[in-house]
Image (cartoon, rainbow, N blue to C red; front, side, top):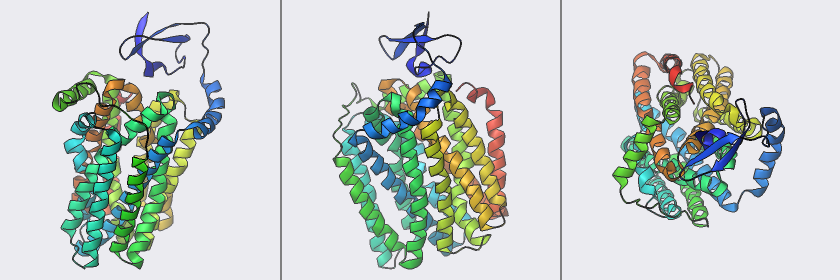
Length: 446
C-alpha cells in the first residue's frame, strides 16, 4: 500500500488501476486498489456541464455574497487603475511613474502576504473582511474629496494604491478561504472559475466605466462610484452567516508563518505552483500598466478608447472562465495552468507589436483567455494541495509570490522610459517565455 494526499486522487483513477480513498488521521488518505470504482476522463467530460449546472443551483447564498464582494472589489480596482493611469500619465508623461502607481497595489502582497495568512486565522474572517473593504471605501472617499477641491496630486494616488493593495493582499487568505469552506473542496475548481469569471467581468466593466467617467465628469466621479460599490460590498460581507472558527494556537503568527513557508520548500508540487506564479507576475502581469501608455502614444486613443481597449482583455477572460467551468477536468489542471501562462506571454507580445487598435484588441482577447485559465487554477491548485489546517497560511505565501510583481513593474517601467513601451513590453514577454522554459524541471511535477 502507498499513502497519498486526497488532492492527488480527487476521485479519479488516472494511472493504471482504480483506487478507493479511505480517510485516515491527519491530512492524508489511504489509496488502495478497488474493483468497484471506475473513472475516466471521457465520462467526466460528459458530466461536467451537468455538474456545473448543479453547482449553480445548489451553491449556498454565502458563496454568492462572497462572490459579489470579489466582483465589487475587482471592479473598483480596474476602474481606479485605468483612471489613475491616465491621470498620472497626463500629469507626468512618464511610463515609469504609471507603472509605479500600479506596482504599489502589489507591494503589500510581497511585504505582508505570508503574515496575513497566519494573522487571518486569529480572528473572525467575516468581520475582518468587512473591515478591510470598509478601509478601502474610506480611502476612495478621501480621494474624491481631494479631487473635488482640485488638489489631487500623484502622491495621493500612490498612497491610496498602497492602502488598497493591502486589502488586495488579504483576498486569498480571507475571502477565498471562506469561499472554499462554504463550497467544499469537491466544488472548489468550479467555485474559483465563477469567482475569476466575476473578476473578469469587472475587467470589462471597470476600465470602460473608468474611462467614460474620467472623460465625462473627472476622476472625482470615478472615486464616488467606488465608494458606493464598496458600501454594498461591506453590507454583503456582514450578511455572510457561515462562521469559520479561529485555528487552535493561531496566536503564534511568526511560527505559523514559517511553517507555511517551510512546507512550500519541502513540497515539490506546491513549490512548482509558486514558481510559475512568480514567472507570471514578474514577466506577464506588469504589461497591463502599459496599456494606457501604448493606447495613448502608439494607438492614439483618448480616455474612452483606452478604457474600452483595456476592457477587451476582460471579454476574453470572461469567455475563458465560462469555458473552464463547463469543460475543464482535474486531469488537465496542471497543463492548463502552465499553458495559460505561456499563452498569456505570447498574447502580450502580440499586443506590443499590434499597429492598430483592432489587432491590439485581438491580442488582448488572447491574454484574457489565458489569464483566466491561470488565475482560476492558481488558487485551485494551491487550495487542493495544501493541508486543510494550513490553507490560509499557504494562500498567504501565494500572495507573497504574487507580490513579486513589483519587480516586473519597475523593470518594465524603466525599460519603457528608455526604449519605448511597445519594445519594452515585447522584450519582457520573451524573457518570460525563456524563464518558463528554463523552469520546466520544476513545473512538470505539478
